[in-house]
Length: 161
Length: 159
Image (cartoon, rainbow over all chains, first blue to last red; front, top):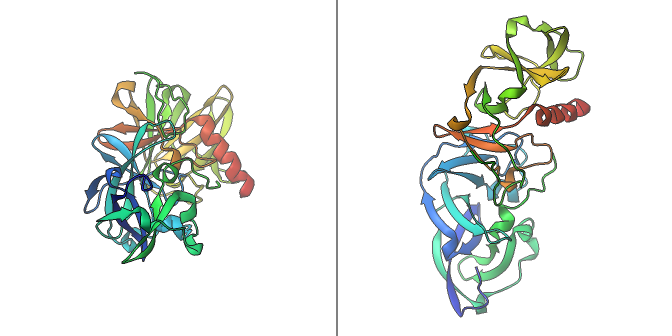
């Protein structure tokens, strides 16, 4: 998502955890899935990216930003986990190869228009969002919104064993 | 089938293994190269022995006794063996090996599974999962005797 080169561009505002909102580029969103999918849990994977599911014949890793940002160490019991939306995204790795992944959302994404004038610094309390964001803009309704760098989100895991 | 590598994946090449043994452990499905499987034994043949951390018993393979482990769905050691565990899969190389108890096993041919890369974001330091496999719209985890053995060594150190 290159906000700086266009006077304004479209983006998706994602509700990922409580009152946490992030953004991705318009073309990074592929599909929204409502309802539960069959998840396969991969042993010894990070607690925030523990599951995959099959979509159009591909294995899609599911990244739970709520767990990642709040440093949760154990998964909730299946019955305690509220039903969420699955957002299938695509992104390019540093070698420009296209990959797919999925983010869990609390609510349906909202399409917004973002201009250069809205660009701002990440807030001081950005915490772990700083590791996975490439920029930030000020959205009138929500305040600062980090823009996710999806190749970092789905990049090498730094979690200790 | 060509060897599988991936894009935003671990970068490790996993070659087809000329067949796999699928071990069902609860909801986890692990695939091991068939050539590493030595024998299948009944859990009734396991002799109780908990001298080694994580070990639930020993099983005789030829003239030697190998340790047997009971794993949970996150590949952690479990002390109590659920009633569903029926089979002890003995795997190894030459004189070194171990047994894993599981609910059931299936013999899979190369052509029955499609190997895909483990996403980079899912690979932790001691993960023994080397790739994923798709079979009949189901996702399974590919590992092997040595990779799982390294995890066991680590778990035994911290026990």
